Image (tube, rainbow, N blue to C red; front, side, top):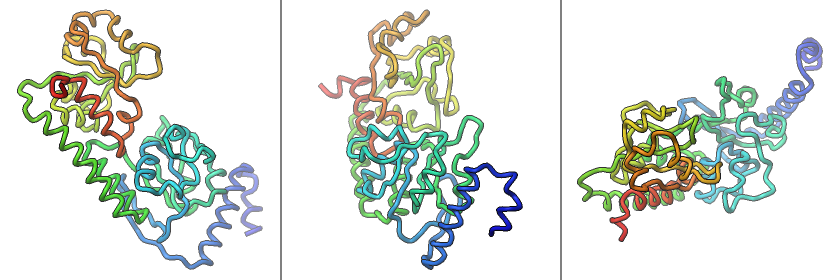
Length: 313
């Protein structure tokens, strides 16, 4: 081992050497314990070998952290991403990791049994921030961005399975399904569906979602129609595209400016949109509408009541 490090010393940074040394120690400890593992396919299609006992979890996305908490497994968390810090019930003293650039050395020192990551943890260049940790033998499972509410159920079932919390997962999914069914039943008598534009980023860089997204599915569940339902997934529409499609209702989960509703009303050309003319612009909770987890129900209820208030009179 000493000869190996001596040969590559000039090509390794001090951090990389430290990472490899710690990895060797972890590998040695794991080998000595003789613990077995099981092979699973994660939500991104990767094959991963995980330990038969999961007691130390690193969660790198708030949607995953919410699911872990709702499965009553939060006591196993040893680190979370910074966006998970506002989740009620999560320990404030847990180390907070950068969403795109998590500190590998910090993670290694925590000796996790598993890292539950998001497909969105990859940087803008597509680089996998956990590649080195995976190559070192630390199990990393990826939860891709859900394309529908059904896929969120599957995410919950997957995480419940790897954490040996199947009963909690079944209960959580059944509770969600019952509430979604309730909203679907309210929408079942709607004869003329409202056209909806759901905005997640304000002008000049407007952003929304089209088909194959859980946001589009949520709009459908409440009995409405996404004006971008025929466009693929993530969209940056022009103002002209929104004006031309003339939504009856505009929903926004933007929370980083003081008055997102007023900003929409005052955009050039938007005064011709029905939603603006009829004052049908509503702000939806950002967390529950942007995190594909067990907590989308509050956003679904807000959306349903905003688009079809007559159903709740």
